[in-house]
Image (cartoon, rainbow, N blue to C red):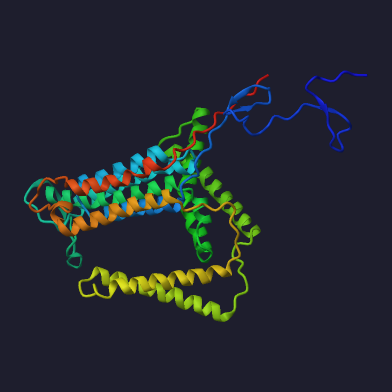
Length: 410
């Protein structure tokens, strides 16, 4: 008779043939903060991580910061908004390929500023100025091109106005890039209502184009460097461009096949009366939102703006709820909108609301003049309001560190 190992026991499961097996270690902890490893040693139990923040909260926070950027042309406040979004991205950006697109949005913002300044130099500006920086040779244009000039006098006032205007647009682009780097696009798609599912798929596919494109370019450039081939300049761009386009085409074909296999675009049978009611509520709600927003922006419509806006929002939400009954969808582990999501959203909305109030009470501080040319000053309480946008860096969980690859042992 063969002796058994002291820690082995015969398996009583059917189909094992009476073979001896080692007992499985318990997957749970031992009750003292440790867990057993397959080798029989103990290791500290892994701490339970808090669930990730709802992706919609990141987008609402970033769009609110972008809204705040549209209320001012003060370069100091705009720079503070950029620094706020950049700090949150640096501390809470996950280690995923799609989160690396933030740098591309920053480069796009810098390009916008440079292009705007070049246009102001070459095409001129309607802003009058007394401080001439330099004069370019002016090209005479025909009579039908009145109001447009090529070259001529370039003033400091015109360049300053162009810089303020371009910096505002650049801040808006950087805020959108922060949302694209912080929010998971696939999880955002899961959170959309059923009526907006097809539209949400198109938007998410469009938003994920830039992250996938950047990841492909980095991968191909790294491969060319390992092979000793140039990866910069016009030649490197041409050599990388074709594989990137090929990968985008293959990804599109695979996405179309996956969407078709999952029944994308198929709807449930809904009575005609429900369809008409849904269309009427949705269109009426959108018209009500437009009319209410117009009333809020004009002095004459201040009395009816808020009621019409609220009625339009209620009708649009009712239409979306009825329209969601046409789409048969199930959600696996849906993201919960918890207290942290409310706080993150509230921080961004607070920044937008306070800067809107500041723009109405002190427009000279938030929109410094360029004629005459004066140095911008930093208003204290609007700057403190912008710092409220740093709240997500304090209350949201830190991103999980990437697991290091284990080398195979021989």
